[in-house]
Amino acid sequence: MAQTDVQGSRSVEGLRGSAIIAYVLYLVGWPTLHLATIAGLVLAYIQRGDARGTMWESHYNNLIETFWIALLVLVIAIPLCFVVIGIPLLLGLAAWVLYRTIKGLVRAIETQPYA
Image (cartoon, rainbow, N blue to C red; front, side):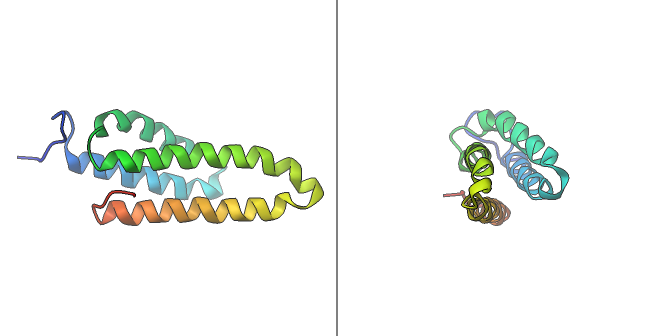
């Protein structure tokens, strides 16, 4: 019998698999104009409710927070590229997003919470 989360509505393996898929979509999104990233974000929002009270909630929260913080910094950094300071901001943002995504993917594969 499959192990289930607190609400009994979704197997832990299903939540793990969805988290891994969302992280992979984030990584695939880089060369595809982030269409895959948006799909990963939607998946994270859909699964977050089922993950409440489990360690997988931290993964879905990480995915959602990473997207929105990156979008905010991107909106600020792009106009700043005209005065050169935006370029290092964009490079730092790319490194930060990759770090959080890869860390989350590794932790999900190892069946560990994000934090």
